[in-house]
Length: 68
Image (tube, rainbow, N blue to C red; front, side, top):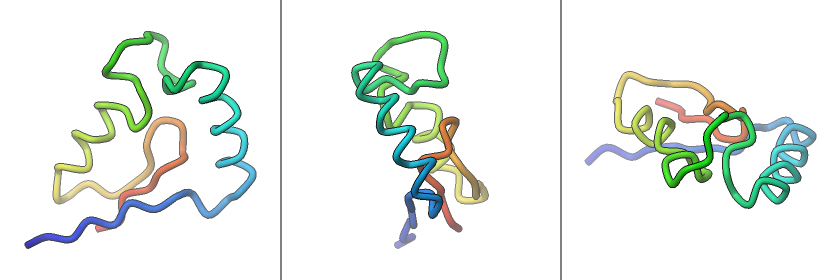
């Protein structure tokens, strides 16, 4: 069984700003141009990246980080 590590960005100012923007957008990723169920935070694109065992990195808005 593979354990995933999804972490918040350690930069608290980035997390604070992204959370403010999520409130403003109604929960949609503030960095996606289209608002759809696929762009609700945690967006579909990042969830797909999480599924890739080789991926390590941040989501679009830099709020979440997937660690290998």
